[in-house]
Length: 310
Image 1 (cartoon, rainbow, N blue to C red):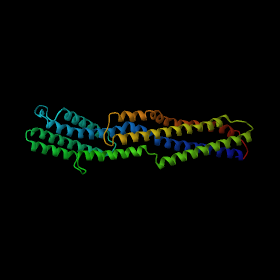
Image 2 (image 1 turned 60 degrees about the vertical axis):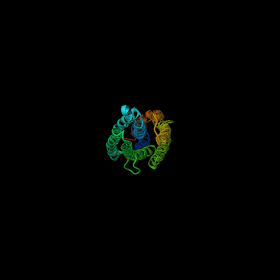
Image 3 (image 1 turned 30 degrees about the vertical axis):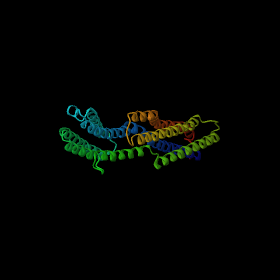
Image 4 (image 1 turned 90 degrees about the horizontal axis):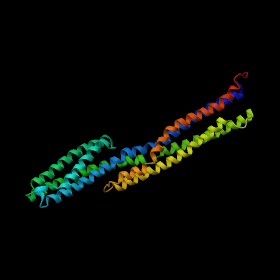
């Protein structure tokens, strides 16, 4: 094999290897951020809002029951329509939260236990209604119901929900954080693409000197294709900014009480990230296209030395 042919074969092998490595690292770096946009919108945000809603409606249910049982119409209305509505909403959100929690198996077990405790809490309120004509017993059962909601430790219903919420907010923090692994992945991707660009430019310079051709169109196109890194980096910055905005919304708006607007606001904040996340599928296609261009630009030059004497 002639020296020129050996160089061309080595350079082709190096370019193809570097292309595969660069696009693999780019895929991992881009996917590491873009995948979290769907996870936050479709899983974590609804789970956090559901728990916040359960917590708020249960707290309101007790206040409504206490007021309703102290009213002159308690014989007819019982604890009151507001209490029944709040308890029904809490039960529905609990059922959804068991299916959608992002706190894993411990979170689901916590919610199953909480569901049982809510049933016991409702029984205590009912006993307060049964004993509505006896203020001492009525207030005692209401006191038991209040203590079951918040025991002051970790066994109360609201205490359990707050502990679960902290776990879910921890998941949100991990999803919205741009950690050191992602930093390393993007630094490595930029370094690999820079090396690939320099190698392509050097290859074209050497081919021009050896074969007296001004431009190799395939390698020139491959070099231009490396510009794909810049919009992907921009998309990553934009997605990360949306993730941090969503985290701020969920953390601040559900810290004390939830509002019906929280989830729509989060979804609106994350809306533009969905199509950016879909771009991840184009990265392997880009790598394949660049490898094909490199092969198309190099193989004919290698073939010219196929029958050179050893």
